[in-house]
Amino acid sequence: MIYQSLKKQDPEIAELIQKEIDRQKNGLVMIPSENHCSVAVLEAMGTVLSNKYAEGYPQKRYYTGNQYIDQIEQLAIDRAKKLFSAEHANVQPNAGSPANLAIYLALLKPGDKVMGMKLDQGGHLTHGHPVNLSGQLYNFVQYGVRKDTEQIDLDEIREMAKKEKPKMIVTGATAYPRIFDFKAFRKICDEVDAILLADISHFVGLCLSDDHPKPFPFADVVMTTTHKTLRGPRSAIILTKKEYAKAIDKAIFPGTQGGPLENMIAAKAVCFAEAAKPEFKTYAHQIVLNAKTLAETFIQEGLELVSGGTDNHLMLIKCAPLGLTGRQGSEALAQGGIYTNRNTIPYDTGTAFEPTGIRLGTPALTSRGMKEGQMKIIGKIIAKVLKNINNDNILKELKDVVAQLCQEFPVYKEMTI
Ligand code: DSN
Image 1 (cartoon, rainbow, N blue to C red):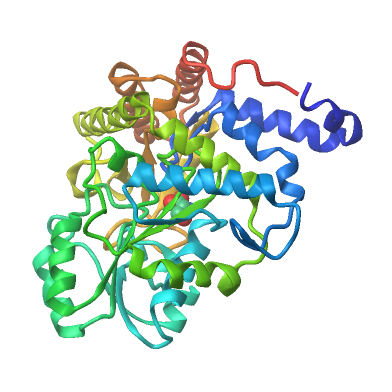
Image 2: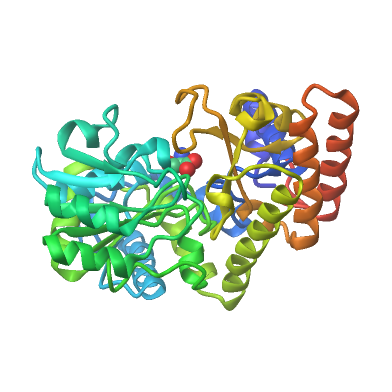
């Protein structure tokens, strides 16, 4: 019913959307930053809320007609604060990258020194990479992982902080399979009088199930996207201690954004309510159990993983020992319907465009209801494909495994255009 007008008016786009629905239904999404949000979240995104301008904040708008929008945004704020035990929430950021830039605008001056994790060792572009505005506007010094353990060394970070005296330390990553000890980072920040920013975008769901340390009360500011392990709409929020609330709000609007996307804010409110349910904790805990089983299976099959395993939702396979690049490996898997992404690994011998790692994880598979048993099957077939690239029989075997699992663990069962 909902897609009928689209199908009639624009069959070209409708057909492509249908193909993407089928791709998601008939493939296994293992890109660790992707997930399958609920139909309720999808429905909230596709509403007339998208038609409304609402510059400002609830009860302080520049446009009339915001009586219902205000209630929706206030609900989103209240739910976010409760869910994360935050003193203040800004639910307007459109995505993670602009949210991080707004945080810098709020709390730093151009040229200020900041510490963030290197992109090629797990960090994010907005954590100070020179091609990103963060690295161009602020004086980032970057920390990484130890060569022997491929993990963060807090003593090294403390030493660096004492030497560099940054105004802010950014924690969080996009390709780091271990945890961030926010309490320890707080201590380091206190020693050098730095602000602690926790970008929990990747492992946010795990913070809610206590499978990863919670950022509050240790962090001053927390940013998270809402579509990864939180399983909501493609968006972001900022959570802060009260003392930074005004500056953050000002940096989002009017600092970096105009009218907020109220349809997305409604969808975020829906996802916060979903994440507050006890079932969500069970889901997030299962993501970690699944990731551990998958990592163990890879190791048993003779694959090498960055840092030797995982404590969270993702892992990185080293492709060089298999005589492959990350691109060759991830494309071979995608041919059979397993979606991962090529990624740099610490001390990569390749380049950013041709790295030697594959990044993959379990949030979306867990949303389909898969458990440890399925992870063993998936781990074995992935290892087989990577060890026998360009083997048509094994590609066929991969396709059969994917088809069987997709049938047993359907997603968006009734959805069709
Ligand atoms: N692009 C996201 C990821 O895949 O992790 C981070 O922004």
